[in-house]
Image (cartoon, rainbow, N blue to C red; front, side, top):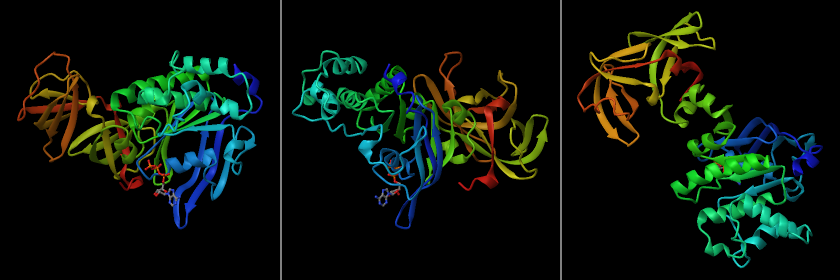
Length: 372
Ligand code: ATP
């Protein structure tokens, strides 16, 4: 493949203490980041967190106020966009409407003076599963197909890094889900580094090997999707990656490899890999799908923390699962998502229930480290 031939000059994408200020406003604050070569990396965060600015600095469309950007051993911080082995796919595909699909895809090669583009174009169209569409005009394709043309056009020059700025933002939900799987397949097939910007947590988790959650110009947490989901380190990350029940607790102290926490009079044990101050306030987090629900007196087939005195306050049937809200004695409503296996009838509003979860499914957040 082309990658083998490029091995000498390619490598990891590295951001070192990258800061971007717009007048007195700091959009990106001393960002340190390594994207391993050939990986799928997602920058995830709410609107205004600085993810697009970060991407634009890698593309060369913005210059960092301070810090360095490197590709392998080569510093590219101040290089012109076209001098970088980097290409970008935007949400607006910006295809040339008067050119056919093959001509659109060949555009980058032609501009570099490549004459015989047919083979590369047809390989690219195969890759994005648009074989046989070469002679159509962009207007004759669906939104999802046009996005694939944009992708093929960006990939044909074999950039070392492909930047994707909300590329699926204009597609409807069903098409988006399909394209997420497609994008991941294509990335695996071409083996290039993809850096994807999105505010959609499901999108980031579906595709990326590593997700960096950004908030207010800094990375709050970075890791594999499952690790972030199961072990968020702040309430922001816990809430941004899916739904969480956060229960206020008082940290009692370590006990072997767990930490004991008093939650509204019940002592719970949370696997603790970090030091927490005894007597400090904390949050015990548990994902709604990890909570078991049972009618009072009923069996809960999970060992662990059991909370009594709940009452079902809302029930939503959503096909694969039923989503309950349960009002607890201390007034908090907890979310419980239960798979609809048909094992027992759906519980009605007003039913007295107990909740429980396995201790290893909960996470502990130190309230003093977390203002939100
Ligand atoms: P979105 O998803 O809405 O694009 P984002 O996380 O990508 O959000 P950025 O576009 O990186 O956020 O913007 C980060 C912050 O920097 C925002 O508050 C934005 O208003 C500000 N900003 C971005 N570009 C400029 C600019 N050229 N001049 C001044 N402020 C800017």
